[in-house]
Image (cartoon, rainbow, N blue to C red; front, side):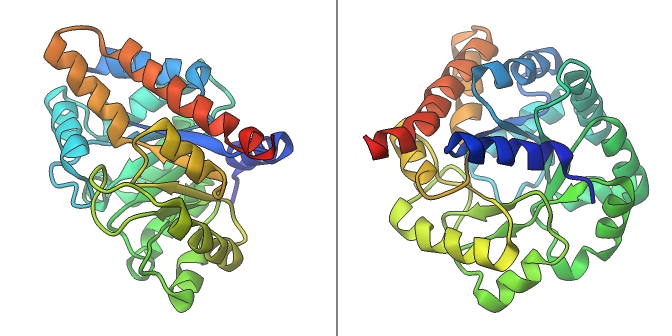
Length: 276
């Protein structure tokens, strides 16, 4: 399994003595061209890793903000094929930033496992998070991704006990995504006190870096999580900026990238502040 870009980024973060910032955005939100503008601006705004959602009509793990973003992406015509084209357009101008696709199994199954894995690799995608595909049902997908040298990144949750973490760790590469709250995205806030021991358990079980998401809304909360995790993921708070821009009839990219800068700055400064 090739995880060159992902491994290189986490190695660089470790050398810098800080956590990474992972920005989640939805393909096609609010339009194909604006989504590409946002994608291209994310690294300079401070995103160390990018998660690119592919729109789906029934995103069961998502709260209202990302549900609405998915509907906007679908309205803009961004199918899974269109998402891969968007990824390829981003990769043409950025050879280093890890790019992870995040979404649900139905579009992948409709696309075809082998075809999806092949086309994802060709588009420069480094990994895939499939929210509703448990390890027990991931055999065909895992084989296809392995053959294409694309990482399968799995989710761990507050209800994952030690036995379950061993199962989750099998076949996972790049990093593990720890869901910090029980529930959907963008509703509850993560608590660093409860996240810290969970991150240690996931690290021990997997031997991989742990990125924490599903409850990061403010720079303060991002900094708190950055002190205990290897990376901090923000998504709902970013797609909220797209919605706000649409409501005000102004361009979305400047608002999204400003929010990314605020969150990524907090993540970068978190451990330095801790040691002062």
